[in-house]
Amino acid sequence: MCLKNIQLTEYQAKYFDRDEIPVEAGIKLYEKYPAQVDVGFPNYRTRDQWCLKAKGWVGYIPLSSEIVININPKVSIKNLFGMLEYAYNLKSFRFLEGEVHCDSLAGFYNNLAYILAQKILERCRKGLYRAYVPKTEQLTYVRGKLNVQRIIQKPWEVKLNCHYEENTADIAENQILAWTLSIISHSGFCFENVSAIVRKAYHALQGLVTLQPYQPQYCIKQQYNRLNEDYQILHYLCRFFLENTIPSHEKGKNATLPFLVNMDRLYELFIAEWLKVHLPSNFTLKFQERVNIVKNLYFKTDLVLYEAATSTPRYIIDTKYKTQDNPSSQDIAQVVAYAVSKSCQEVILLYPTNLTYALDAVVGNIRVRSLTFALDHNLDVAGQTFLNDMLDDYQ
Image (cartoon, rainbow, N blue to C red; front, side, top):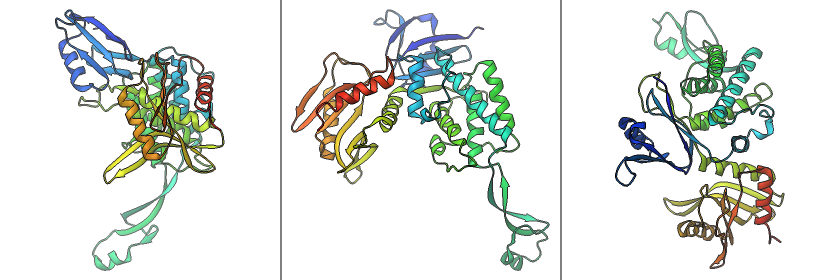
């Protein structure tokens, strides 16, 4: 049976005839992925059609062996790569230059998977990074230090309890790579030529590295030195795949895994990392800063810009990856509360597209503005435009 691809675009509703989507698939989408897709079942209001609307996520959702949902971004694939470079700290490596030859989300995923597998194979050819790991074993010979106390307590034991250090490649740095390759190989999203090189890279690690599950945050908690500095880019790429490949609801190792990118989160990360690179030197940036109100009650601000000389909060920026005519009263109330908690007099609601009715108002003594960091053209040019607009009256 031919695989049916249902194509959606984020934030756009699309209608399908009743017989285009099996009821079981529609129920699964409704129950398992409510954060990703709004599902309207065929009824009188939908003229007996399915109505599907993506909610700010892009990617790939396998509903069965016969039907998959592809959610396409509203931004260009080129700019999606650009956002990724900044958000996942890949910009400085310049490894994507000349290698972006795709115009679809599938091509985007496969490009990154191919690059990661190639770089892992390259590291395997050079030799995997190794480290000394402490071990304790019962041995028939002396290795390292003897556990004398145990020998005294249990003199009848033939084997010796030894503490020693083993130089091994079976360490977190390499286990992260193996786990990520395993996730990619089970995603079901790779082209055949990419699957082949992913399998080759995985097999190169087998026998040397134990397959251990890792959370994305471990990819940015590793320590690097001159012997393993090239692992940093590998771990940044691994973080991308581990953050955006959703654990499957199906049982069995052959289940296809959903690949879903939260564009709201990506936009927030992108803005933070772009500002770190391009902010004037008289500002410092704090990302996701926690502001305690009372016990067990706190705010988390998206971005706060401080004057470097005085550590005074100058601007609070709240990113809003959505398209609308004007800011909602709820969004305004939220950023004003942030500003009051930080004693900051300027707040920015930041959108990826121009609003029909832009906002520039004063609430109490707090200036509230809506500004744009556009994603439809050159990102660095758009960023400079945003910076100029934000700092228009800065003295």
